[in-house]
Image (cartoon, one colour):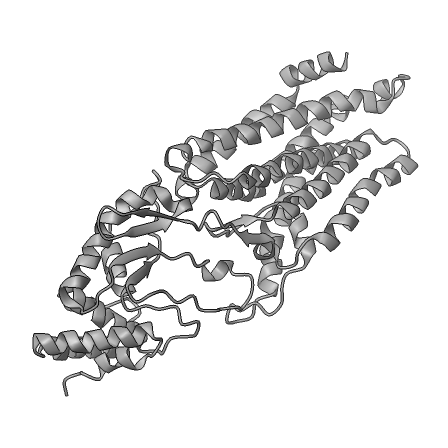
Length: 461
């Protein structure tokens, strides 16, 4: 009987419309932002979780609208006069809403997966776990919304819940994070572990994943919250209402002490498989990380061109190019900057931008100069001298055989210094140029800034 009523609710109630609207909204938002996750399963999972800041308020509002149905049609007193327990009447409706929002979420993920499969070189199983946490989150939001709609059957209930839900999952995490950052954007203290009770995630590096322990604890909390919503929906007496809050309180009491501090960065860990190298050995070796394996065909050509340009000018030039496996600075958990120096025969480059189709976006010609500049870079684990970027630009221009291109951050004095130093350098005999630039690179690889800064000392008077 309950199954038959559930099918009727799915066909005739607002649950189906709520699910369809969630599906369309989620699909549009995901498919207009494919560059953020294409070719990377973990980024798709994280992006799906970040979209909860839109879908959760929508589920809250939809649940409130559905929860007002009895009051809207003025049948509250009629149903209250029957001997049938209230929970028997609300469970099919709540089940229909849960099926609708959960199915919409899963379908959006599967649709977006069509953009990931063709170019994904690595499938971490934890991506499914991370994405799956969104299901109990949506169910909990829908049931809490139904309970609120039943308790306060007013027209403004649904929009107010939508605004409150967006503030809680979309704004509060950012406000808490900003409160723990000083004026120089340095973390002064980690965010509290309770911040991870909010199921949205943002800003995960391609080499990171969310610890499975965190996903399981979040699931525990969200399931307990969903149970509270369902019990509130079926509660009639004050004692039942007080009992209904107990699962959420217990779930939070168990989860919060076990969750890590630091918000998303505290929950993230490096995926050792994602940073494994995939190489092309048909010529000078070029390697990218496994999670960016689809970029290798696009990277090989410019990387070998850069190595060839270095070999033509530099003594003891590098002979291989490897993608950096360093986590982006905004994704690091703490202040540990232990250097990971690379060999002198290797240049280490950052991954190129990824286009909407999952291939490297090299359209503006920035990648080759960045590869040439990598010849003068070493991870020294400390702040560079203020003039080092300017000196690297001049050294890159020397490799490229073209005058340095002014950068946006240059002052007029920097432009004059760069042009003067470049002209002074290229006016030297070829053999002396090679010797000086070889010495500058050797100093850079040894984390001595004097070699690079000597290039600026060659300015013409």
